[in-house]
Amino acid sequence: MLIHDFTKNHPSKRDTGMTPTPTTFFLVRHGQTTWNVERRLQGHLNSPLTETGRRQARAAGKTLKDTPIAAAFTSPSGRAVETAEGIIGRRDITLTRHEGLREIGLGPLEGMPLSEAEKQHPKACRDFWEAPHDFDLPGAERFSQVQERVLGTIDGLFRSHAGQTLLLVSHAIAIKTALAFFLEKELRDLGDIRLPENGRILTLRETGGRLALLDPDACIIKAETVK
Image (cartoon, rainbow, N blue to C red; front, top):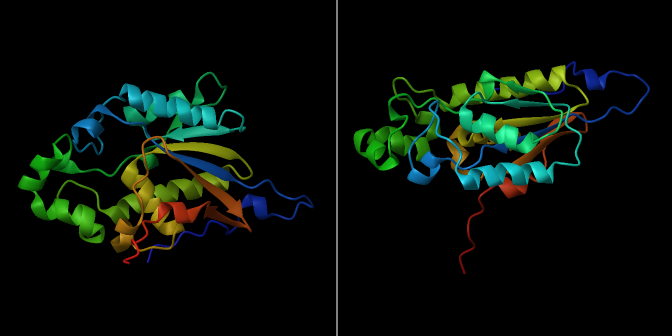
């Protein structure tokens, strides 16, 4: 089982006689892209933000404009970088590209229309949505690999930026795998977690000595009550 301890030896837990400032992450999915609109699979490939995507980035920036942010980290994919730049705007915030925040690598599916991918690789596409723990396609990453590197990235930043507020810009599946950990769900149950909307801001904050997801209920898909 994947285990990440976000409290062990964390600098903010040291006894300094002062109440430590909680470490906070604002985790944002990139804005809408042309391939999102065309329903093409992106993975490690890139397509530019649409005008809607640029507006989403600016809207996120407006939401965070009065919040001090020590540093920003983004997936190196162009759509994430463009989103991060749109959020930061004219603020004096250093932006660093981090490989650990990349989207899941989809190998031969990248750049392919979803409809065509479903014809050529029906099992892989079915597993991708319905059984992500079984998704296994030559040249593509497994969901467990994505979760490991994203959580490893968050863990590293949690330790190196104790007491700071950071902006992280990433991608839908990368973010969902991280949410699974904080929601204490297995990857097989990833379908229970909402796909983060483009430009959505999620907050991870150190609470009671642990890094936790704020408003977790908003990330869960609830079954409709049958009347």
